Length: 93
Image (cartoon, rainbow, N blue to C red):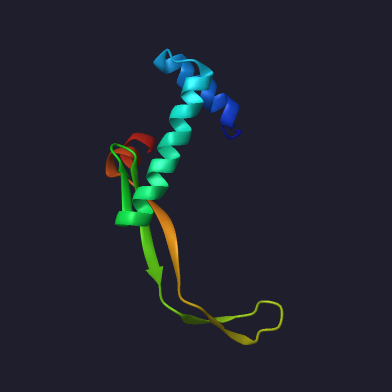
């Protein structure tokens, strides 16, 4: 089972929507830009029926260097997670 590549995605989107591959590519690119802007500004971006991107602040914590076993401090940071919608989970499972 192989993953869908970007050209395959563009071809599938063009086939489903009737757009050209170039227009489908522009749409996906603009959607990605919009999603990242919204997550940065508001903390989340919702794709109805699919899920949402959420900005999460991770606290600093202690970790362990797997090579030496030495304890190290892991700094606090902000990460983006994708939470799958219930409808999407049920459709896949």
